[in-house]
Image 1 (spheres, rainbow, N blue to C red):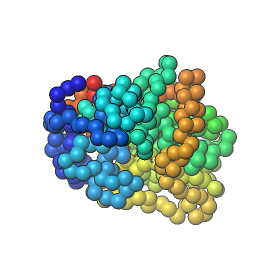
Image 2: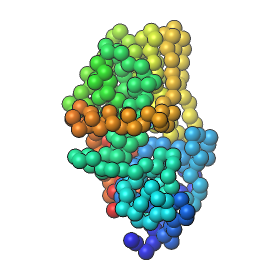
Image 3: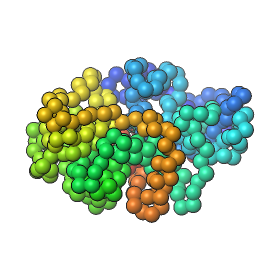
Image 4: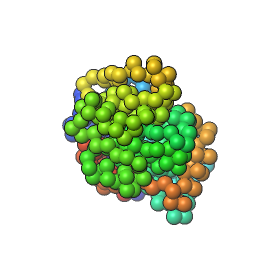
Amino acid sequence: MLKENRRFRLVSRPQGTPQADNFSFDRQPLPVAGDGQFVVRNHYASLDPAMRGWMDDLPSYMPPIELGDAVRAATIGVIVESKTPDYPVGQWVAGLHALEDYSLGAPGGTTRRIEPAAGVPITNYLSIMGGVGLTAYFGFFEECRPKAGDTILVSGAAGAVGSLVGQMASLAGCRTIGIAGGPEKCGRILARYGFSAAIDYKGKDVKELAAAIKAAAPDGLDIVFENVGGIPLDAALLNLRKGARVALCGLISEYNAPERIGARNLWPLIPAHASIRGVLATEFMTEFPAARAQLERWLVAGRLKIDEHVETGLDQAYAAFMRLFDGRHDGKLLLKIV
Ligand SMILES: NC(=O)c1ccc[n+]([C@@H]2O[C@H](COP(=O)([O-])OP(=O)(O)OC[C@H]3O[C@@H](n4cnc5c(N)ncnc54)[C@H](OP(=O)(O)O)[C@@H]3O)[C@@H](O)[C@H]2O)c1
């Protein structure tokens, strides 16, 4: 047990792109568990685009991070002090904690005990077996309502959610087109994640990207799984097929933008009688155990591949987090704390 708690704290709200001085990395007294609580020694943290949204004081599905608090993050670690019987000392636990050595936790919400399965690395519980896997699973199977033979377009296809959606869509018998940044990532989504076609969005305006999508899907798109927004979304909306389903998972291209524009090409939804729906895995919490069991079966059987990019050190949290926005990571971005 360390004598102090190193914490990566939010000290001012970013205006646009987060800057290093929006954060402070310092040492504070160790937390002490109250009744019904535990203290977890965090081993790994998940670095997620959603964390950028939690830094803003705007209405969302979760309250903003309070100024002065450590930056909220999903973590996995081992309990070192407990005043709640079901979460004993020594237990691996995952939950929504923070970028710090030690966090206070409590049962409920997304907190859960982890019993590491043989052959499943502990980090997988923050990637494929965590929020990313569940978002891909429910976003694809529930919101996209796939049928064998459907053509699906996935933006952010080399990323954590996108790479899993592409693989699940192949398992469901869909034809998969991925959009990613640069030739290397495009090569990877074909070779490693089995996409049928890859489109590099870099340097393309809406018209050029829409033409590239049309060339890859001349009969149009049955499903759009949107992780990026902006140009990729506008281009996708120009290629909808009758009855298309657009699953809106994320809009990362807008998270650091001064204003959120949203979609500019909504009109094709009308003639296509298409739908657009938000993706929120927590709407399906009662089905999480069954979904995790399925994800684990696919993982162990080698039918789903997950890549993890691990940066090391709480003191590197800012630089590591910013990789989400310039794409300098292959797969799920994680921070190793100890
Ligand atoms: N709805 C939910 O509950 C939920 C849950 C998890 C994630 N999400 C959303 O899903 C999306 C993907 O999340 P993830 O965790 O899987 O992250 P990720 O895809 O692993 O990483 C983010 C990727 O986004 C791309 N990107 C970043 N800035 C961009 C920009 N300005 N324009 C175009 N592409 C940009 C980069 O890929 P390239 O190198 O290819 O550009 C980057 O690698 C995010 O929008 C996230 O908010 C939603």
